[in-house]
Every structure is written in C-alpha cells, then in structure tokens.
Length: 325
Image (cartoon, rainbow, N blue to C red):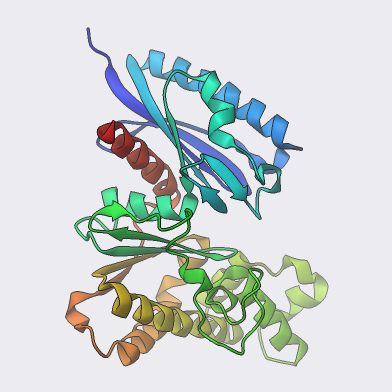
C-alpha cells in the first residue's frame, strides 16, 4: 500500500525554530517548535535539528505517510547551491555553517536550503496573497526589512544566492548608515529597529507622545511591537513614524515595479500589523512615483498566511525540487 507523500518544512528565525509536515497541497498536517535563542553554539543547534529529523520520521509514521524531502529557511545570507549559511545576524551560531552537508547524513531524504524572506514570498505566492501573480515581490517588515522575488512563477535566487533585497535599496542617499554598511537603505526607514530608533530621538527632542512615560521609565521597553500598538491607538508620534514607513515603502516599491513589471506586492511580518496606518501613505507615494507603469496593473496587499508563510514556502521549495528530480 502506497504511503501518502509529505515534506518537512523548517523556518528558523532568531527567536523560534518552527517545523511542519506538509502535503503537496500546502496543508500542514503536524507542527512543533522550539526556542532558537536557547542554543549556546552551533553543535548544540545541529544536534537539536538532528533530533528533529527523527521526530519527523515518527510523526510521519503516525500519519501513515512517507517523507520525500525537506526545505529549510534560515534568516540571513545563505548560499543555496552550497547548502551553506554564510552569515545570519540573528542566529550567529550558524555563521559559516555547511548546514545541508552536516544534516544530510542524518536522513535518507534530500534537503534544500533557502533564505527565509525568499520562502515567505514563495509561500504567499503558492497559497497566500500572491496566488495567481507570477510576477510578485514579497516584503517582510520586522526588526529589518527582507524581500523575495517571484518571476515567471519561480523563485528568483539571483547571483551568489542574493536577490530580492529591497530592504537594502537606497531611498535616501545621505541617510543613516545601515547595518549593511550602505547609507539610506529602505531598512533604515521602514524596519522596526530603525523606526523605534527614530521615535526615541524625537522623544529626546521633546516630541509629544503617550510613549514618553514608558520610554523614560525603561528605554529598552520601547520596541517595534510597542510602536505598532501605539499607532493602532492613534498616538501622534507613532503615526508620524508609520507615515515615514509608508512613504519609504512606496518609493522603493515604485522603483522595483518600474524595473520588473510586477503585478502584486505582498507585505507581511510583525511590523506590518500596522498596515491600516501606513498603507494610505504607501499608496499615495507609490502612485505619485509610478509614472511609466499602469496603476491598475499593480496591487499592494497584506500577507494572508501569517507566521505560516515561511513554512509553506519551505514546503513549496521541497516539492519543486522533488519535481525537478
């Protein structure tokens, strides 16, 4: 009797690592998670992942299914062809880690590695807000700004495993120096970290805000999530911060659309929970700058899959690779 085929999906971020068993229709049949931040070093993390592979086999057996492959999404710069994590700012224990070659001996099925923002885009294209749009850009707003490109219905990996990095497009040539080394990246305007930095600077200058009491009591308590909540409650300074987010996103998206002829842009991530606040400014700036592309051919929408986008994208990566094989 043939067993139902499944793939393993892994989405590893700086805070949590999430795994799932996913069928060919994108349905999650089992899931579990653990705290990435508790891993003291690379060997401990790899040992935990090896144990997860055994759990995958057990859960698949319980479902009467057979695992065919695994897609792994990791935050940072990854080299998919080499199966290696080059640099992961939020998971430093994985820096320069040949992840696939270290894990492959532990399992009979093949493994494929990709950047987590790319898999966000792939997941939203397959089962989410990008479905039916083969020319699509996915943008993740969190601590930083990530991006992934779908061109002609396929994930675009670019040269040397780097593409879709809209967060490091320049929107202000004389702007702040980004963590990447460039000045004026979109990330310095639209990410949680840099928006909070700007808000703290305005509070130091005397700006009026409900956030002042919190900031003066504990500056570190003012985080991206705090800013989202404040904006949704119409705090004036938080609203101004998200106006900056929306306008900078509109500027960057206009450039990407002029270059690539995209029909859909999907925006997700924790910082994007303030969508209703920044979306009007995004649209206004976008259509002010979108001079050579028909406005009706483009839509910018919020993501649909929530935290599952990366898992669904990792599963889609595995199914596509198995199809190629």
